[in-house]
Structures are given as structure tokens and as C-alpha cells.
Image (cartoon, rainbow, N blue to C red; front, side):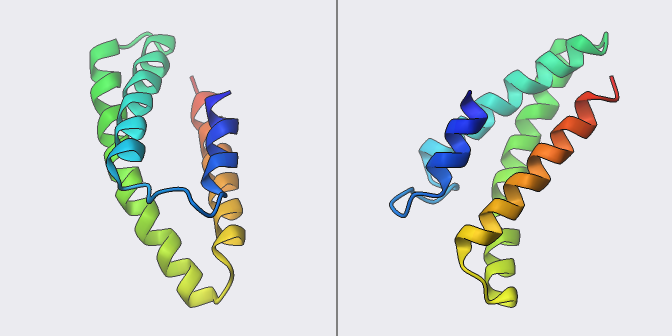
Length: 101
């Protein structure tokens, strides 16, 4: 449910930058929680999974922002289309990762 809400919210014109505190904090919290869940599901330490998920949330936030901004500029496409592509990659990557455990 949170992923669907994020996909919709991300496309709104007045959505704040993902690196602003609300978005960054949300990504850190959900990254840590997801990392812990995936790690436990794979029979590993929840603490290590949470730490890796937290780091992934931070890195993904800033790297995703830079990648999206550069793609919009280099492809000369509206941000909306690049955002949809970003969502497809994130969903596909997530499904790939969790299907390996």
C-alpha cells in the first residue's frame, strides 16, 4: 500500500524534493524496515538487514535523485515519464531481490 501511495504521490506537481527531510526520513525508515524483513525472511540477522536497508534508503534517495534529474535533462523528456520508468525499475528490482530468498 505504501509503494502504491508513493508512486501516486511522487507524480503530483507540488510534491517536495525526495531529498527534503520528509521524503528522506520516510525512505530511511522504510528501507530499514524492509531490510530487516527481507533479512529475517532469508534466515539472517534483522539488525544487519535493517542497517543495510537504512544505508540503501539513503544512497537510493540521493543516487535516484541524481539519476532521474540527469535522465530528464539528457533524454529531454518530461519528468513524469522518467519517474514512471524509475518506478518500473524499482518494482522489478524489488521483485527480483525478494524472489531470490
